Length: 301
Ligand code: HMG
Ligand code: MG
Image (cartoon, rainbow, N blue to C red; front, top):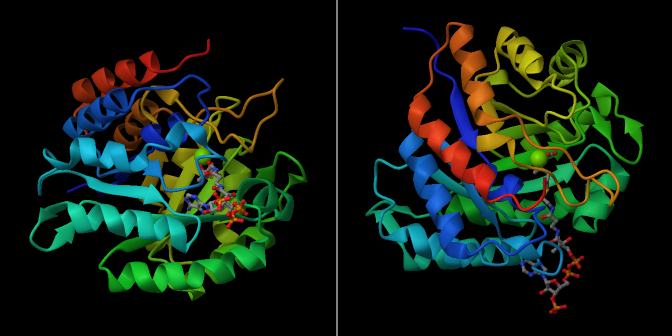
């Protein structure tokens, strides 16, 4: 049996958070439904963040409500970003209303997020790195008490849109601090797609978290993300994020002239996994349909 690679589709969250037009909740629900049918392992459905900061995802609870009736035991793990305890409270409120089976709530995982760049952390979550990790401590503890898994994102794992290149030691430091507060998984984000296979390898070699607990989250600005996935597979990483249709971009990683770049398309990611002789649970045709629908939600060019 070839090794199995875990695929998380983040298009409903990272893909849509930067859209300026209002996307009706029902269309987001339909995207999640199509992704569930594609056989990905996990779907990052939305964010419980301030709607003033990210207006596009202000309907997070509504999206979960929309899928609650159909999300059964066979569905992928459903997750959401939570920047603080208020966000966790909102996620737990969803789980108090809807359960997918007797043992678990609708949301199976929450994700806290910080960065290896001080400037980016402040612009994105209005807190420095140390302050953000302190804030996450109770979020991780309470999420675990409620039976949820926790992912911890490290943005700017290769470079920062404001500070430039970020050294692997800085990424390693933040990754270990997240591991220390007990996150189950550390997700290394190449927020602006600056990575190349060699820099991704150097970063992975420096990060002291066991490879089984790592996920790689690549944006594909320069068309190099597929090469970076190959390199990371060679290093032993077996969990990756992608966005159907290549949607994506953090609103706090771009400027008006230069919007933040899209995530690696989940379709591309799955192609690289298969070419590498590894397995994943995705149905290519169903994923292609989800990708076409995801792209149709995009307002801009
Ligand atoms: P703040 O302004 O410092 O928050 O924002 P605050 O605690 O001072 O509260 C201010 C107001 O926000 C209050 O409301 C709070 O209730 C409310 P008011 O009393 O003024 O009416 N508030 C909230 N509302 C809803 N949900 C919450 C919440 N928390 C406070 N959870 C905060 C701090 C973290 C909230 C803000 O900065 C924020 O929401 N940031 C989110 C930014 C974001 O979502 N960025 C995109 C995701 S990260 C990303 O894309 C990178 C990634 O893809 C990986 C990669 O590519 O590298 C993950
Ligand atoms: Mg991202």
